[in-house]
Image (cartoon, each protein chain N blue to C red):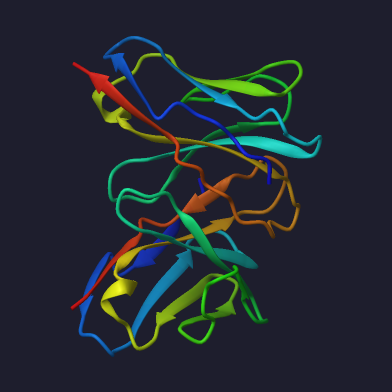
Length: 113
Length: 116
């Protein structure tokens, strides 16, 4: 799997948009960008994923650069409950779901009141 | 959405005993499930891939005789930590993927194992 680089930690004020960057300069053509978050002592929670187009769901937006070498996860209106470690992962899509995920260190996002 | 249930959430066992952790996909069938381990202040590490009806695939450095995986049905995988030792104390997490395009991985809530 391609490696990702994320800042170790970030702060964001409550109510503001949180923009979490991820660098994946060695991503392959068949690899998707996945974002997960983990709140302390819980299992990771799926947020969003994409291949090359920008994606949006009820939780977040994912902006992928045209060359696919980096992406940004946007939480539009951060709340205190969004404090967590956010993982950006690239992984090939396998229709049979045969590939586990390789987690890096992630970004510890702290939402400040 | 897809739900993965993991049980127990916490377990304390004595050194030398075995512990079984269950992982169930509640509303979908999963031919493949994954087991991860997470030590304090570290990231998740993939331990093994559990395949329904066949042997699990273990990552390098994971002892298959110590971490027994059984995936007997399309909705249940179990991880048994045999002859547990204090260094096996960790947070164990399972995950599964509902098939089809656009499917992300769903994770269980994790099991905190403490070996005393």
